[in-house]
Length: 377
Image (cartoon, rainbow, N blue to C red):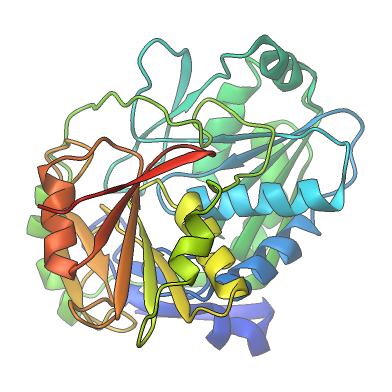
């Protein structure tokens, strides 16, 4: 049984979050975000509002600021908050990084654990450009971005790793949609050994009591075992955050105009793949600004059960080459008049299969100024 007590944001809860059951015996429930663009179809303009609100919680700092988006779920949120903060602070030159489940060949990395996850090992690669390395070393504040904060264990692990490469670090700020640390909130600074502040749209605490007769949980063990049997994958980086970036994502010239000008009788879904979420958001936002009825979402390797806010589950192939099942939630084949799949990996059979299942088109992003539509065989 899950008990939730809200201190702040009660009126906003229904528009931001819902509940789902996870196929994970370590933590059998999920606060499912409606504005994240991950497990639930999200409206780009509502996502922008969340990015701006979270960026506004970041305290002023002397010196550079580093933003880190947390894989897998919050890579898009992290980059959105980074961009919103950069727009509000012109000339500040912040640095954005994302954690990842994958290794970039030849790049140095820090490792840390997300203990409650079905795939606990995470990597944070160090920037390759000297100027970005200098920014990382000189930064006095790091902003860690995730969709939900409960125990803070993952962030404690990450900060311990960061302090080895950020000698000037004097403050941690956590930007999160939901802060559920409750009376443990004030312990984070002590656990990190550094002042830590939290900015969230919701604030409260939860308590979970395991019950053997709770319906969805009886399916957890086998499902989780099937989804944790992956192997380490190396991935060439397309320049969207794993190795650091200091600029906002832009889109190739002509792409938005071409897609916005197409006649579509119904809604468009712009679908990211796994950690590659932000380019899909940027494309969806640009199409919405031109009057297109659009939703943004992403595939995921996170196993969730058919219950609560999850009304449909589609098992989909994995384009990253892992031995791990991927999923798409709350999307049925034929539900959208047009589906655009944004991907960073080279075209492969799993992507072709996914496009065929959804009747979708593939758009391969290799950089800010180049995206190629791939014919679906």
